[in-house]
Amino acid sequence: MIVRCLHCGVKNRIPKVRLQDRPACGSCHNPLDEMIIRCLHCGAKNRMPENRIHDRPLCGACKTPLIVCHAPAFPVDVNDQNFSREVLGEACSVLVDCWAPWCGPCKTMEPVMEDLAVKYGGAVKIAKLNVDENPLTASQYAIRSIPTLLFFRGGVVVQRLVGAQSREAVEEQLLATIKTN
Image (cartoon, rainbow, N blue to C red; front, side, top):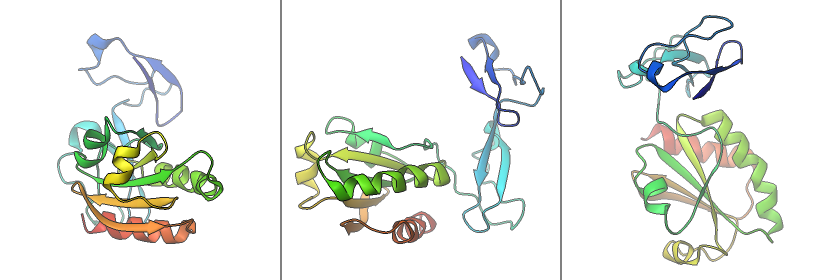
């Protein structure tokens, strides 16, 4: 398995038998099981060992609880087959971008979704649903115009934004969804 060090950025090859140990980077010797979690209240970056992630961690700077889930730092493609697992079954908040390849406004929203996935990875999952290829899910959530952004919390839609939105508007709604988790 290849693991990138959060401290120096070096890729480390770790044998599967050593994953249960606490592997260290071959270059800088820092532990490879640490995660960086950004506080949604003050923006501070917090380093935390992966085994302490379920201990209700607090921000080191402002002492507010850190919101943690295992969401990737990139948008995830969802479809009719995996929508239940990837969105409805997710413990953390999920933002679903309903789009189509021919839609101009959808293309303008793509960098916004990628930026939000990087910024809030670990606190929210960003998913992309191609409505042309997945008509069942699109009709289930009454997607009549695109782009449509669906905000899920606990498997339920809590907010819907229709049309191209500014980054600030999407981020504001995303933060409201996360903080009421």
